[in-house]
Length: 166
Image (cartoon, rainbow, N blue to C red; front, side, top):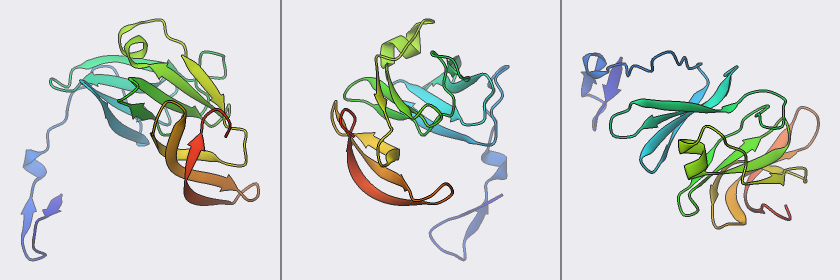
């Protein structure tokens, strides 16, 4: 593995500087994304068969827990989208594209409790839905809107999205 520095002519081999971080029994698929939430780092695994999000302590990188069970049930996530951590509201915004809903989870409940259910949920059954987004306030997000144009095609644009009215 190589890493390009300031100049195209100067290349440094950094393979000896990369160290695997143990995750215990947890296995991640090749379809994962990392985010941060205050004192925690979270990994969303889009192809997980058990829990869709794994949480680690940000300073020690120690594994804490896995949350958001995958499945069709009422307390499960069918097809997780890109998770947004809203630092101002201390909440996680979790899109479920399979159920066409956006679930809002309280940070404390999700990170520290074994019992968790969404604090709120919003329907994404409008003309389009946000795929990647950031929270602007309690009711609005700014993100990339996906607008289906047929069963297999779509358009994208940047837009504000009101969680209550669409």
